[in-house]
Length: 373
Ligand code: SAM
Image 1 (tube, rainbow, N blue to C red):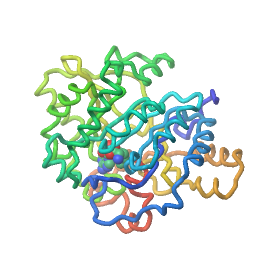
Image 2 (cartoon, rainbow, N blue to C red):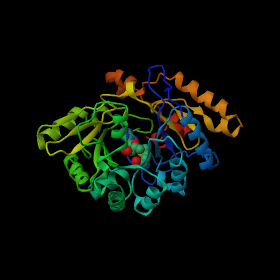
Image 3 (cartoon, rainbow, N blue to C red):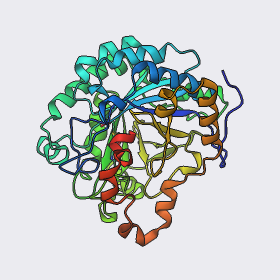
């Protein structure tokens, strides 16, 4: 496997790949899929598992060592455990994780774990049933909580979650240790929206504690597809910390050099949580993520308008070396700083859409749910 990292124009290594396995979702969250109609990827364009596996080999040969499966809702992809088994069997992979809304998790968790899945993140924005329906437009809170209970049983019930791949990685790279409270194998991601669920920060942390899951609060982002976003809906990291400090007392920042999107914090009782502040304090300078859509378009930034069509290359019969050269050049040329550019717009941000709605209609790749969040 590659030892010298492949660096982009801002010295960011190619190491973290988010693999979307479907653009379909069984929720319609207001901050992600608020419209009534969507244009879906043609089914024949969606990569077969063998094609994904080939691409993963090429990415790995160029330095990718961490993979996260996402979507759409990844558990809607038939026989996902087979893909997990295929990818987890590859030597040299330091992490294989999944992001899911949890609805179908209870039935699939044992198979996924047996296939080699190492970490899991469940998106959950509210613990109130009526709010869940208003926000996600399906009455699925009960199934999500059943999924989380199953994930707790399989991933975090023994407390093993405290030893994490990322902590091991930090130690391997001789980065400063976080001083305990390493990230967990089970996480809950909550998008926080003003006046919608920002009164549930404490409840979500307490719920996380009860199942040994670390909660990460995500600032509402104006990504493609978030057509209802407005700056006044954003609860900033600063505001979240102020509110949590008022409730819990002094909060300590956990300092560890990492490319992880969340900054982590510790409450006085030792409980850890994270905040992903892409909207008000972007982490573009350390972002090592790229995204492969279910139909094989490769995007170098969540905000990018253009991607590289790896499916066309693969199905067109290019050699593996030519494919590797395409990806290598794409990464070497990478200069994306999408979230920083949005922040630089200042007050204008509200009037300049990330992607105009008519473009979204024409090209589903511009949607958050297609490129995997
Ligand atoms: N269906 C899976 C899930 O719900 O986790 C995976 C795909 S979803 C697009 C991935 C993540 O993106 C979720 O945690 C979701 O909350 C987040 N997300 C979607 N739209 C967002 C937005 N406008 N701002 C911040 N996070 C967003």
